[in-house]
Length: 126
Image 1: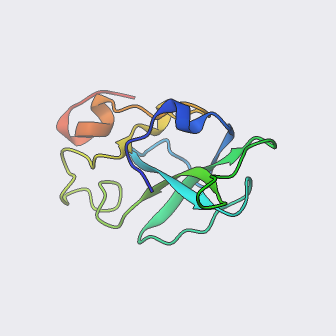
Image 2: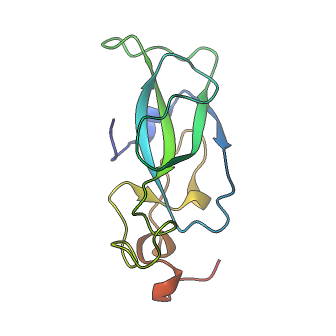
């Protein structure tokens, strides 16, 4: 798993699938996880909940070292701002947090004032 991603790691992405609405989420965490499949909901083995994932192109190659596909997942942990508004991320965000409005296939999500400070800090309006 990696939290600081580069666009070149995401070249085989085809679509982003959201499992729930991101309209009211300031941020989601993004990570590159190993999966035995190119498409469909991957296994989720973290605390918290998966918010979305990417499907890969039909010709996507497996990682030569692991023999698995590398797919991006989007998730929130129990102590993240959307779950605990007055918790540790009331202001600020974890390193892998990005604004879900900036996520698209093949492009790393971006940090924005909204994702980094949150609406409660008076960052930006949607």
